[in-house]
Amino acid sequence: MSVIAEIIDALENKIEKLFVKINSLEKNNQGLKIELTKAAQTIQTQSQEIEALKSQYETLKIANALLGSEDNKRDTKLKINSLIREIDYCIAQLSD
Image (tube, rainbow, N blue to C red):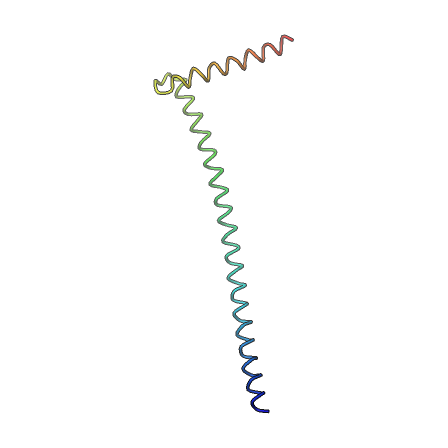
């Protein structure tokens, strides 16, 4: 009977160690989930900042072109023509 008792004690010890390990892994998993959420939020914030900066860059590029920069002369002409077409369209809509 003592052999069976030793086997049972050994099994209980192994099961207890497994429970401790499971708890440790669950805590680690929760920490990783929190870290992943924070990283996703950071990525989203940075993506929004990138889009805002791209928009600002385009605005500055157009403003620079409107000021007569030689580098963006073609873009300036295209933008002005586009604006004129939009104004003409609006006038046509108002006159109807």
